[in-house]
Amino acid sequence: MVSNHGGEKNIGEMTVLVTGASRGIGAQIALRFASVGMNVVIHYMNSHEAANEVARKCMEKGAKVLTVAADLRSKEQILRMKEKLESHGLRPDIVVNNAGISHYGLLSDVDEAQWDDVMDVNLKSVFLCSQTFMPYMISQRFGRIINVSSIWGISGGSCEVVYSAAKGGVNAFTKALAKELAPSGVTVNAVAPGAVKTEMMDRFDEAELKQLEEEIPAGRLASPEEISSLVYFLALPESGYITGQIISPNGGWVT
Image (cartoon, rainbow, N blue to C red; front, side, top):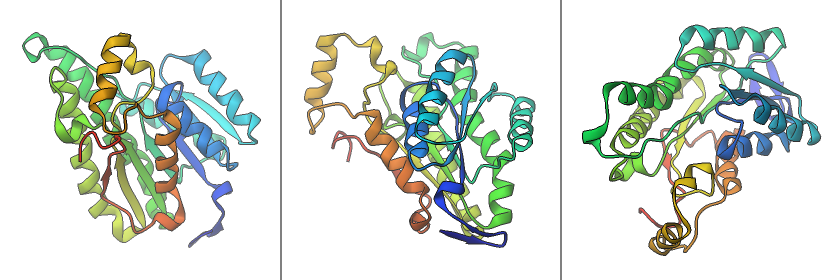
């Protein structure tokens, strides 16, 4: 139970906004929060049907669910998303900045538009969403901002320079904002997974996946459920002393 100037709020009375929640890790995060009866806001950009399917599964768990479409590269669209939430009586106590795109290829082949797109979706969106929704958290002296980063933001990935740079920016943003918001009772952390069984791994064939698994001390890829459990833990009221951390569930791949 959380105490704030507006009274006490149980975990089931809170609202979580998960960006990029129509599939993969984001969808599993939404389902994890729905399992405790939390109000879940499922953000998507274009995948309307997929987002509705995630919403249906969340509602089966007894959660109040709202789906919202927005291009997170646009401050204007994020503000419209905020207005829609408020029109439904929802203000996020927890924001999970999960939306992202990958890019694979030699840096010499990257053009400026590709660089800007990866940076805007992976990093600018974290800035805009955090800036938009943190005032409410500050006002109630409780909140959680959890950024989904990547192992490549820590170690760097060959042929993933742009993506690595964006996620490295997310990690630095996390550490800095955590210091800024700590006096207000708001924590900011990042989860930086290693290889996870999601659609992002579809570019690898069976032989490549086997080789990848052999490089990981745990001998396997992570499941989206394992990542969502960590995100959920960081959102709990009793996790309030954990802030500014980049936690990387990666099976011992990078230590």
